[in-house]
Amino acid sequence: MAEPGRSLHPSPRGRGRTERRTLRLLRLLLCVGTAFQVTQGAGPELHACKESEYHYEYTACDSTGSRWRVAVPHSPGLCTSLPDPVKGTECSFSCKAGEFLDMKDQSCKPCAEGRYSLGTGIRFDEWDELPHGFASLSTNMEIDESTACTDKDYFYTHTACDANGETQLMYKWAQPKICGEDLEGAVKLPASGVKTRCPPCNPGFFKTSNSTCEPCPYGSYSNGSDCSHCPAGTEPVVGFEYKWWNTLPTNMETTVLSGINFEYKGMTGWEVAGDHIYTAVGASDNDFMILTLVVPGFR
Image (cartoon, rainbow, N blue to C red; front, side, top):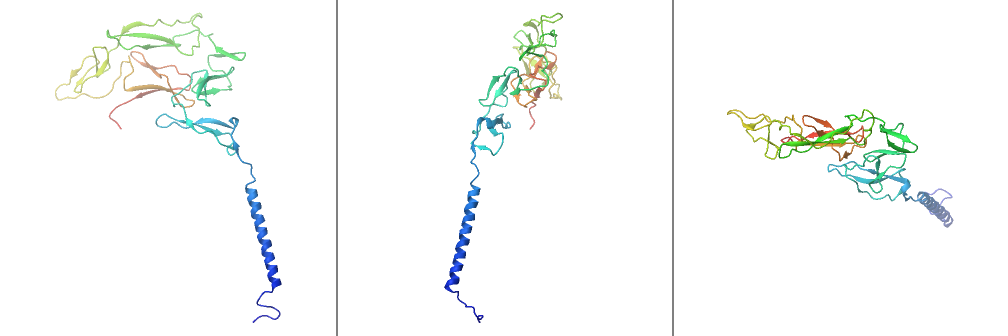
């Protein structure tokens, strides 16, 4: 039962107040929603990145020795529309000493006056002390040849054996040359082209008619001269024994790995020298001289 003075049906006047309140509420919600949208969209649009706002980097090298050059913003989130990734130089690519790798066009450029580079794509704009062998004159740099050359400043290589079983010694100054050969007490670079007898082949090999060394057939052995058949009931002990180094064996590889950016250089890390093998001169003290022996038959 309805309470006295109250009606179960709202009056036209009451309905009007309710409708006005509902309309005001809808307007309020609409205004709040519009304000929220305006606030969300009021942030400044990101502009296209300028060249001064990003730099280039290389991705890690993949199993094929390839990489990509990508643009990286100095401050992420401040600009957009970075240049697309492009194919980078091969991982073995390296600039010469005195040059650096310009990442914009991926080419080697000479260092500016007053700066130096050890190669490998790295440029030094600042340093605490000059590298060994350099002296500063004004803003220029030049090689210091105030030290007399010694036999440690040059190296030699062997040519392949000729048909007469002879090889030539070839002498070269280590580069960059940081000594003077005209100073008192300095040694001269020995004359190249002197012929000497080729060393014998390594055990298990024999010398062919053109003075190259080839492995003995299975079932035979050698001490580096001629191959002999194994006695009945025996078999050869298979293995590698290198005693003579006239040429680098075909199952060996040598290269130089930069200790700065860990990229391979197109340089020889080891040189053969008759009865021994030695590391060549690298571009910097940070380089790794790598000698790899490939042994077939393993997985």
